[in-house]
Image (spheres, rainbow, N blue to C red):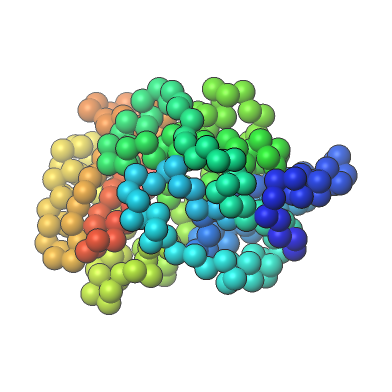
Length: 280
């Protein structure tokens, strides 16, 4: 495994590859867990060369304290990536990526960024799309891999690639869960014992909501989820939405030919946890 800190050194190595070798990119912000590594595994299965990037992107944080507190575990991340057979790792500085102009590009996401996460994290998706676009331009991969835990982000990146005319396949990878169902996240390590014990109820509530959804009564599902989580003193619901997969707009009337998804954000103390589930 080779580790690169500069764009120039990474691109020189990529240029040296045979023309018929396929390249898969897995963008990360480090603090890697089994969820990230499952994405590396998927990329390894489908490409000759896998690049993982580790970069904590400042332009996607709406709160400075979240950026400052973001965990840095580079040494253990590199060991984990090497074990999984990752070929190249790109670990640039902010200066290397932004060249002294640390601002996000503005994108038109056709409203995809105005729902759910976008309501609570101003400018977040412009920052995400900015760094992803930069990484695409630097690495020119055939495929790029993103976990479905951040499903809204996944749809926004798909939109960005299409609108910018970037010829890269965006590959979604299903959510990797703990044995008790909690979606894997680097934030899970910040939960205290009581919060960690309560957190799996988020996914259990989604599963029960999915069963109720089959009856076709959206309000019944929403009130069930709200009431279920109110009873758990360790968890506080920020939002629960049912949307279609494409526009991500909250659904009012169901159409049997449309795919729907439920999205949830919950606080356990000051730790914010998100999850989602396909409903049909």
